[in-house]
Length: 319
Image 1 (cartoon, rainbow, N blue to C red):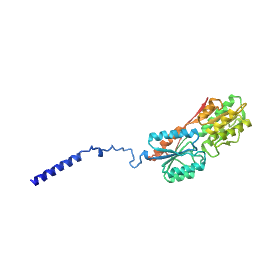
Image 2 (image 1 turned 45 degrees about the vertical axis):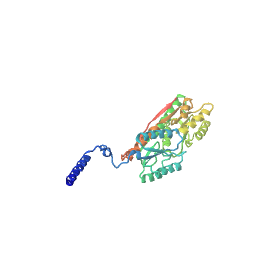
Image 3 (image 1 turned 45 degrees about the horizontal axis):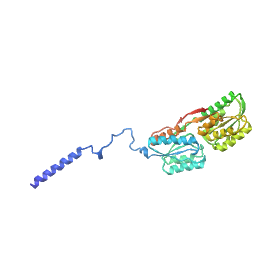
Image 4 (image 1 turned 90 degrees about the vertical axis):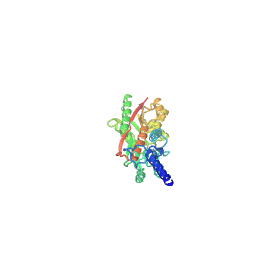
C-alpha cells in the first residue's frame, strides 16, 4: 500500500510540474516582443542628464530658448538643467561647464559667450565623454551639431532694411552707429559684418563699433552719444543693445535716427509699436532649444549627426 501511495504521489507531482512549465502567460514571466531597432546596451532616455548653458539668464532670447528646450525634454523624458550665468561673463560660463560635468551631465547644450575662452573647458568635457551641442553661438571647437541663425545673412538683412528706410526718407549719406555686445561673441560679430556689408558702395559712413555688453542701460548711454554726434541710423546687435537704442531715441528730442535691431522681446515690440524702432530681426530661439535637446538625445543614443549646422531662421518684424 505504501508503495502504491508513493507512486501516486510521484505521478501527481509530475503532472503539476508539467502544468507549470506549460503556463507561459503568468504575469511574472510575460515579456514584451523584442525591438530589433533598439540597442540593448543603450541607456534609457529618462536616465539622460543634459545641461543647457546660455550666455546669461536675463535676456528674453535665452528664456525662450530654455522654454523650447524644456518642451523637448518633457516630450522625450529627459532632464535638462538650465545653468546660465547671471551676466555675460566668460569665467562664469566656464564654471557652469565644469559644474555640469561634475554633476554627471552626459551632454551640454551651450551658447558660447566667446568662441575661444570656453574652448578648453569644452575640450575637457569631451575628454570626460560629454557630448557638445551648440545653440545660437558656437565656440571654436567641433561639436555634434549646431542650431543657430545664419547671423551674417540676418545682419545683412538688417542693413538692407535700414538702408531702404533711409532712402525712403531721402537720406543718402551720413554716419551710422553700431552697438554690439562685445568683441568676442561669434554670433553678434557676424551680424555686424553682415550689416556693414549692406552699405558697401554707398555714401554712408559706419562709425567705430561701441560695446554695451548686451546691457540695455549701457547701450542706451552709447546710443545717446551717437544721437549727440548726429547719426542717421543705429543698429543694435542683440536684445539689450536694441532696447537701449530704442529707449535713447524715445528720450531724444528733434530729428532722431532710424533704429534697426536684433531679437524679440516685449520691450522691443513695444518700442516698434510706438515708432522708436523701425524693425528687429526676430530669431527662433525656442526652435534652437527644442532641436538642441532632440540632437543631444540622438547622440546619447549612439546616433552620429556629423557636426551638422542648421539655420533656424529669422523674420523681419516691423510695426
